[in-house]
Length: 140
Image (tube, rainbow, N blue to C red; front, side):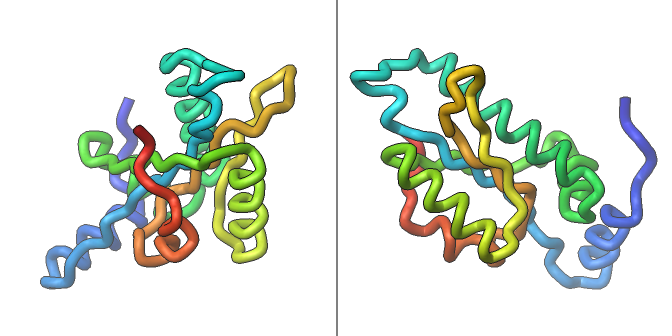
């Protein structure tokens, strides 16, 4: 079910109509690569599920933010970038940095094991968060 056009989306459209480039919003996810390797050897489906959980939780938690509202207005234009963290320590360090810099995100913990598996940011213009993610490469 689609809702009416909200104020955040109108702002993005208004910018486009005025000749200014509309902001491209991206939802970044950082997923632990080591979970796909021994000794963990999680199947691809389990890793995809972790990223989905984190992305959904971040969108829900920050649903009232104008960037999230605008991102969800055009479902066919969603942009996500999935990056890889080598291990849990690196993922938790990133979460700490994001927290210190007031970057909205969700650190997903797989239960009942309480294992940190993925970080999802709410949608952001890449210019606002790129500096915190540049050391991570695309997940392969």
